[in-house]
Image (cartoon, rainbow, N blue to C red; front, side, top):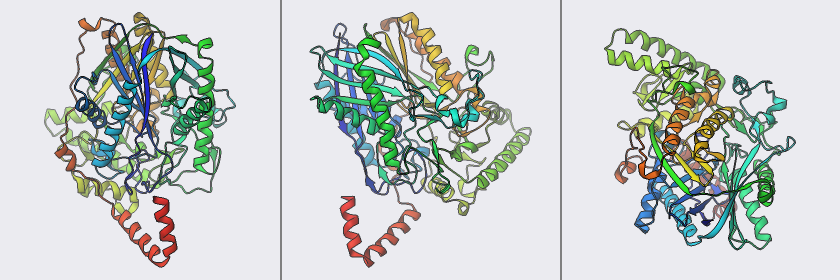
Length: 611
């Protein structure tokens, strides 16, 4: 028996003209609201020991360290004895690409905004806190049931978008093709069912991996995408049965290489991408995909007692902060290598090209140019290092050793682009691509000269709720990488009596992707965005193993050795990099104003639509 509370609140943080978080393109701005965005909070308490945890899933692109720090601060300001801290509060995102940006400490994730938007940050913090407070008020005795279900092969719900990469893995015995891409995914949905002692259904949270990108990068409306629609359909289903307070969270699973798109349409423009879902209208495709997820969740929920198991036992939790830019990996996770290491964060040229099925980036001609320049920079730096001091030689050698086959384009810890800190002078012509101009203008204008552009210190977190473990991490992880991570965690946590391990990505922060070592070598988008190098998965397994083994000991005798702690940013720090309108956007506004002046009736229609 647990004490359980659930609640949801509207967290729609809208500011016209602010970029959306996900695609990173200059024209993907917020102009209207298609659907509200919600946070759904679940509080679970052990009545015998008083231990409690809170899991929150938000309809956002991803969680930032700033957001979690702000949430904990807000909760403590409302109630100093709230009992929440980094260890027992898990903040996750379902990864919609049609939500607000501008709420990160780190400049790289504010490029699409551009800048930090205090009102968006404060709206999110306060609204998510409201969900936690409301869930606390709703706590009552109840039961938790863990269950699972698998999508039938004919359900058009998820497809592998990076087949060449996927096929590199030794686990893949039969190579996947475009015709079998729907099978090159983890088609299992995991679900926790929450039921009151009285028998009333409280809610559910499930995990299934499919990118929340049914809606493409040419969209300008805030929308929770397929998982948001899935949540709405499920809550509506229970409301029709008389339960209007039912809370259904569709959390993101291990979707790093998984797309909801499966139809090729050559009529689209390159920058939008040629792929779409079931329908030509993206919103209709999102609803279609969401309905598939909702139907499966309802099916699992209603058969949970027959096919699942009751979650029993106590509650435990802990967090490990890791400097992922400097991890020496355990050889058991690194193909036996004794010197497998990660390095400072770097984005590759493949990252800049985008995910072809879910949102292309730079044009292939420009990509060839970038590859040529970055390879020349590598040759230059390796030659130059022979004439420099030992510290310089070691840094250059480590960078190229840890990043392996990646064509290093942006070094976000070192604050360098294509080998230089002088962003205005880089060999990357602004006229060649508006996105290039946007990036150059952002860093020249905003500076970020004294802070890394992406985080170095990131949290790993484990909740054990009875015989179920939730392993949370701040990355997007591919299908086979997730399979390896889950297996290694199951082996360790089985000693604690854990029957089910659930991986929780996009949690408590964010810093790119995790691929397998084999996938990394072909340098597709996911490998280019695996920022800590080719041994990132081995580092993640090594550090999770360290945390899991520590949790085998009683909490009172447990020692967690953090690598370091994330830096604090003051409000003054954040206000140094405020939101500003791009020149492109200002020109768009002026053109729209001229059109409105010529056509007053259109002006009234636009105002009504925005309202």
